Length: 75
Image (cartoon, rainbow, N blue to C red):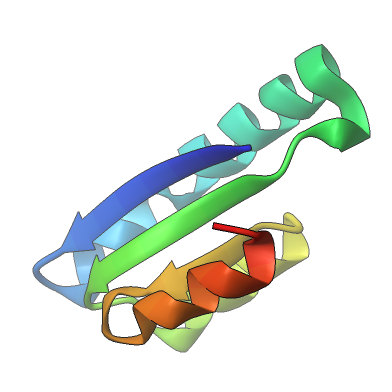
């Protein structure tokens, strides 16, 4: 499992980087296969557009204000 912590002060900055994250996720899956869980820990402003893109890339996420959601990943 890999967890990437993401923090955003506004909605614009995260949308600029979402394609980079998709590419990173594809590279990690190519290296580690389906056994890899790539999880985003989100703090700050992440809108529907960003979340939809990440869901399309098959990334899961946990919000800072719902930290107990890590339980469903065995953490």
